[in-house]
Amino acid sequence: MNKKYSKITIEGDKKTEWICGCFQTADDYFKFCSKHSQTLQKAIQAQVDELDMTLSID
Ligand SMILES: [Zn+2]
Figure 1 (tube, rainbow, N blue to C red):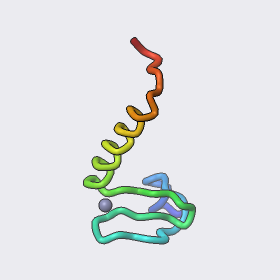
Figure 2 (cartoon, rainbow, N blue to C red):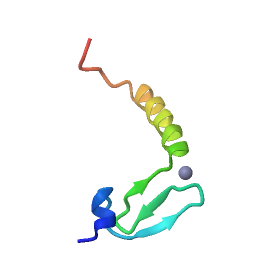
Figure 3 (cartoon, rainbow, N blue to C red):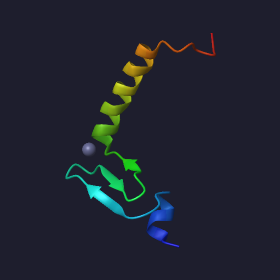
């Protein structure tokens, strides 16, 4: 087992790494840097609104 990867629960080797810190592993797992994960979270929330999903809580 690779200790370096098991610590951060990422399997496999980095396939693509961007200068900002985002990377994609050989298993197509994406890890985003803090800057882009924030942007992505906003994008996901905007898409959820667009999907008009019903909330399960009041
Ligand atoms: Zn990034």
